[in-house]
Image 1 (cartoon, rainbow, N blue to C red):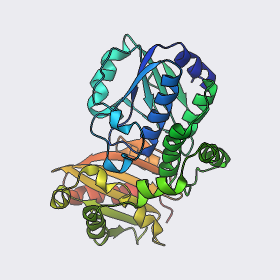
Image 2: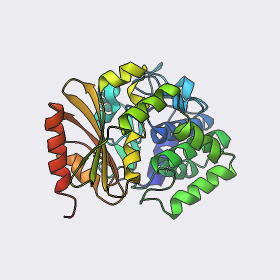
Image 3: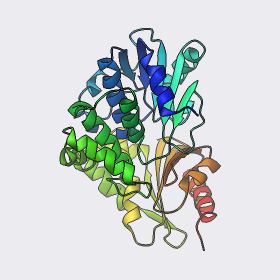
Length: 320
């Protein structure tokens, strides 16, 4: 793996770069991209940010998010990936990245334990938010964060750490957050926009889904199921399910919370959360991965079959 100084040296040499964010973007990948993109632009590097689809409305408060594109507008010298643990996390942009790998400089800055180090240059430091790594990178570039960068970085810190509640939150997390607030980022505004602000339709979706939680393994595993028809019923997209998986961890018996979202008949996007169980290992059983306490995968089959497989696998990791 490369050091943060080596990554900074590579970026300083660039004249142009495209920054890739992962599919179904969250606050961490967007915050990482927006902050790094601004830092590089201020250093004279022509830069733009890509995502495979339109950005969820709840992140519209971030300055610059409206400029994120689904395809590049120029031929860049380098591809930079932020908060992307594997190529398939790029979604529809995966083929574009693969074509460019053979002729472009590729840089990967990430914090997932499951990262496969697939770029030419890789900096992967496990921490609560990739924005911690991006903050270090901006400093290594010789830059200084302004209010716009600070707001982007703090959004990633808050959202990926569960408002600083996850087990991997440490001293560096708080020091980075402090630097962001000193630069002008508003914690209250970001927390409201990213977590609390909901449309009536999204609130109704939460209420219906949570009221039908299913419990397994004597209440130690909770599963929320979001069927495709429910999203259609409320006129919502898949990004509206963000946060549902976290609810069940507030229940005293639950040690693993799962949200399965029906992508189409027989295909489910599965999200895992826990306070102390390594759910990355569970997700890897099904070809997925992520963080120790927050991971995901895709599963295929009939709903009850999927639930049986999940319950059995989780039971192997929970102490009896």
